[in-house]
Image 1 (cartoon, rainbow, N blue to C red):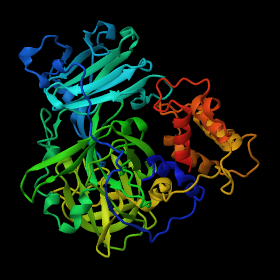
Image 2 (image 1 turned 90 degrees about the vertical axis):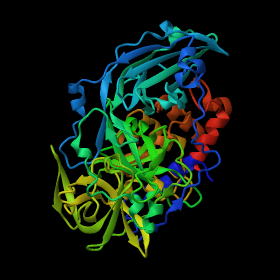
Image 3 (image 1 turned 135 degrees about the vertical axis):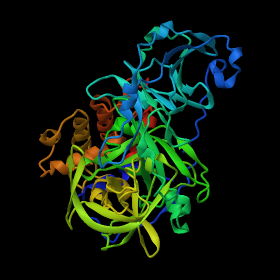
Image 4 (image 1 turned 120 degrees about the horizontal axis):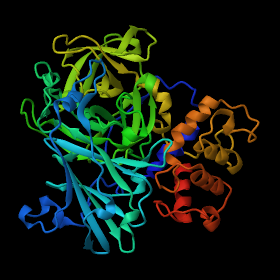
Length: 590
């Protein structure tokens, strides 16, 4: 397989340079069963340095050096009221609330124990009665060289994550502060372990945990533990995916429920779908969902995914799942279309499906199917018919729908099943010659057990498609100039435009004194926005004009070896040598 990054940028500029051209309406892209490349590993093999301090890996009575801890009591009724579901047509399910964590002791005051190659310390934070827990970790500055951070669930030996590096953290806009939401840990405790190699002063490690997300929703039972939420009473009209026709069982393997946590510490559950691209030589885990769930990079980075969550047989009540963590990178989103596309950072399990898709318009009353995790339940199945196209406008209680044959949204009415909170972002399919193709993602709607055929609204993939052609239409190729598709990339035009973009420039500031060509700046900035995930050339998690931008200019100018990387600090970079950076740039450009 080609490198993953080739798909992200390799074809993309040639596709984007014709961005305004209409898509082929009769396009049919076939599904594929996912088989990750040999180098793509989704297994987490993290090991704690202080395994003797992990209660799950030893008898509690054997603890010689108890880890420091902080205990938060059971949430108050006022705190739990934050789980009241909003009266809105949108269908994200709120499952967790923010809890402020008092300041932890500074790292130098943790209990440090000698381990091979240095010293390590652990700290445990608990929130009474939580079904699951995740913590917000913030860094005031990059971790010193060699320092390692791991996260673990103290009572679950198999839940250990890390080692986390600076590139795993996201920089807050307008700040040098870095933050990371830990994976969702089972139970009411989250453990942190910090390793400092010999010679590192632990006083230099500036780490804090200002808040946790107390998740009251139990994934095993699909019920809240403390909150009394009647919204979860759904079983009278739901249809288990296991009871659906065999025609739809493979397609269901493309669907996952996921949780994410926002900047306030609230956690939500939504649904999404893996999408195939047109390059048959690669399989990249692109995942489409709703923008009202995922609409910025920090939210995408917090995503945890639950795959194959479906009853083992119709009516069995038995269901399990496979979970992947590590979040995703936001590639594109459009608020006005309520659509987002992300790329998973960790490979999904072998055997999931990459759903096919089509840009065809739906015929009147065309049969349609929805597959989703309403209320977080094991996969649900809804079927019905296309009603009409429509436009939507936001209100304080959700949105207003106006029928419009040229509208950007699809209304459907169900004859079997409904959708519910947790279904947001789930897919809508139609069949062509008996083959399922994705048509869009759920925004929300009015369907309920009381009014099962009240319409639900989905996006139209054909309207979002122009913003994601750089990935979904990928077939390989060489990048050409941002301003002239008949010319190659050059250092003194394209390289400088990229550097200016990373410096926050817009409009004419991007090309001033560089070219006399007539520029459509809206299209140029769209191209740059779509390129953005690939422009961290050294892999340190930061997009910097005076580093990544300069590296690109130097490369396009033909500089190599010391002339390419001279004067830069690569201490916290994944790619540290001229060879590594040159190979990465060539991978994304050719």
